[in-house]
Length: 122
Image (cartoon, one colour):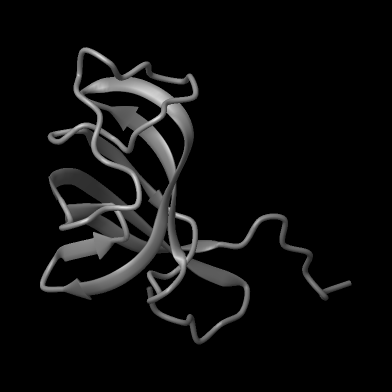
């Protein structure tokens, strides 16, 4: 995400994120689709092939969780917050956390007015 030249605007980045693998020795092993319960507490991390579409809520930073406003989960509208374990690396669209390996694709990026924005004009 870029820092806008005008503080009244913020970059809105729409992404598609797909879990493609688990890291070696994850903090929490991947669940299977049979065991995974959407929208409920789960004992493992996301199943492989989990996919979401949403908007980054902050820039991707090492040692911090990826935070996304999810609008779609596995092709179905599903609003919510997606949060990972801290990011260990991010290179060429591949993001690794303490549990998972994700492919991150930028769908679109644009500058939008901050909300709420109060003008200083009379």
